[in-house]
Amino acid sequence: MSAAGDAGAGAEGERLQKVLARAGFGSRRLSEELIADGRVTVNGEVAELGRRVDPLRDEVAVDGVPAAVRPGLVYYLLNKPRGVVTTASDPQGRPTVVEMVPTEPRVFPVGRLDVDTEGLLVMTNDGDLAFRLTHPSHGVEKAYLAEVAGHPSPAAVRRLREGVALDDGPTSPARVSLTPPNALRLVLHEGRNRQVRRMCEAVGHPVVRLVRYRIGPVTDSSLAPGTWRVLERSEVRSLQEAAAGARPGRR
Ligand code: URA
Picture 1 (cartoon, rainbow, N blue to C red):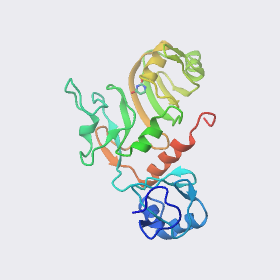
Picture 2 (picture 1 turned 90 degrees about the vertical axis):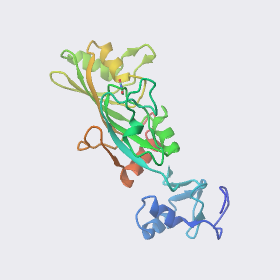
Picture 3 (picture 1 turned 90 degrees about the horizontal axis):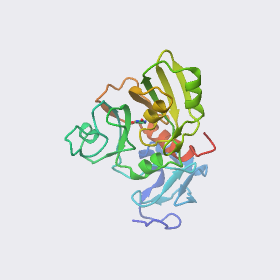
Picture 4 (picture 1 turned 60 degrees about the horizontal axis):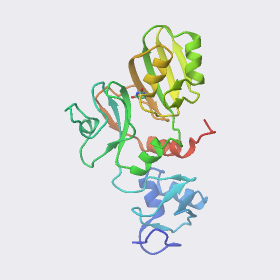
């Protein structure tokens, strides 16, 4: 097999267009066009038609966005119910998100939701994507529906939008809207511990129920609580793009 860093098109490895097609970039023909158009890099260098790669070692990117070319990667979308913990095991014996999806290959949650929070959670064995999606500098947006105590005033909503002081620092500007009397939609780029709960508490409206309904571009209102599905390749791709593109300053 060609090692990472091999220059040019060795006779070993798999054809790049085949690897790209398998990773969801359309037919081999379309993948060839991507290569011919100079949109594909292997280990940082623009690839030429005829290039072969080792999908286990070579880093393939399309338009600068890393492509999930390693075989055996799986991506699930789980609708976590309330009462389930976002860890692999729980000393208190509560159900875990890992028990709610297939056990082979082993996957882990991307980020976390509090035990009392419901909603969408990506689970995967793709450590690169997980790292990029959760890294604070990437700021992939997440959307929440919070049912809160009391009736938030326009001033409270404005404070949530502009940033509230928390004990670990002020929150960044967020998109927040109110559906009267007590349902808030919050779209955040940050992912601090219990952030939505702490923000709402800080403006005097503790959260009664919290649901995450979107992660970057991925949403699914028909996925029942406690069920999961495999993410479409196009969804994985759009998550890759969100993780690569959502940098501070482009929010
Ligand atoms: N914010 C919270 O407060 N809890 C979550 O689970 C996610 C975001």
